[in-house]
Amino acid sequence: MTDTETTLFESNSAGFTEIKPYYASQHGCSRLFTANYNGKKVILKTLKEEYANDKDCQEALQNEYDVTSVLDNKYIRKAIDFVTIGGLGKCLVLEYIEGKSLLEHVRVGTLSTKQVKNVIVEVCDALYYMHRNRIVHCNLKPENILVTANDCRAKIIDIGVPTTEPKADRELLIKEMEYVAPEIIKGEEYDARADIFSIGKIMEFINERNISAQFNNIATHCTQFSREQRFDNISEVKSAITKGHSIVTLIIAAAIIAIALVFVLVFVPKIKANMEKEKAERIAVDFSHAIENMQAESDGLCAKYKLTSIDQPISPNWSEDSLRLANDLQSFYVMDDYRARVLDALETQRNTIAQSRQHDFDALLLESFKTADDSIAVSLREALTEPTDSALFIEAGKWFEQRNN
Image 1: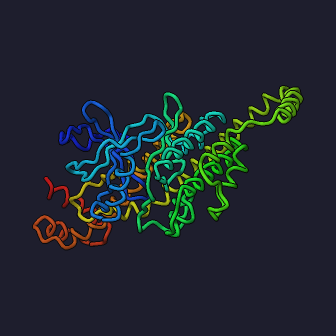
Image 2 (image 1 turned 90 degrees about the vertical axis):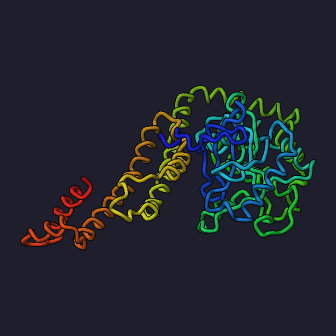
Image 3 (image 1 turned 180 degrees about the vertical axis):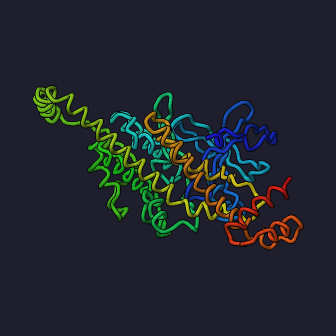
């Protein structure tokens, strides 16, 4: 985890200092850094190195600034500036928000039903403000809704049609576009109802975690394939979430609750224990999937960090991938029961790469020794009575040690 604590840049250009890696999009073209700007912590959003010259990605970054910079709403992250920083290139300077995404909260179950409902209502307020200004978010999903740590308020981020890496496989692209309206995916004209589709998909995600069954019918109405069959505007969605019940309904509900409480109180300890067990099981399944995804990358990472010379260090410098994998497991790292397992998983991945590089080194060392024409190599080979690969490898180690002394 020391990679996340290492300052990559100490640039004083344009007043930015202590620039550190924060997050790299898994399937997108962008990466994030934290920085100090005139004594205030900010986020720098820029392109990954391989996409620094990609015109579509550059245009998307510029467009996000152009759209976000004109918005002033307490539930939308502010865009502060658009600058060029040495070593990073064009950067969108954004407000730093202390908190976690709605995705992390819902997965772990750290928000109450009331808090989740309040966050969704605040997102509706932000969208109402955007739509009134003729701006459509286009990329609304649980990852793009931050929940502030101090007062549990919503902050939506990453406005604009999502850009993904061309090399991402089809299943990952489908998952990345899970919350995007069909008309956007098909490249058709879209309007505010595209965001209504997205917020409906978010409510479905919340329903799957059994946090709020109230969203079921609303989500179904929001996520109709044809936008003509969805709510006409975001105000209707908010109204459906917050509308009150009739007096008769409230009386009936109160009577049912009163009767149910008599029975529920008897089984509260058991119900609570079952809920805790189900929550723990959900977290365990999510963690298992996250580790499986990490392990699936092992072959690709070993190929990426393949040793090509015996003079290279065995230990890999894989800081960018280490940071990315650490970010993928961040929601588990904050839990005491999983912190050690997260660190073990990251260390295991590093060891896998190191072992692969050690194997590469052994093969390169043996081949180099066989073909070396310096006096040490020649004398060591001539001294062998049976030049098998195993015997040659032992002598190769001696040759390498003497050569480097």
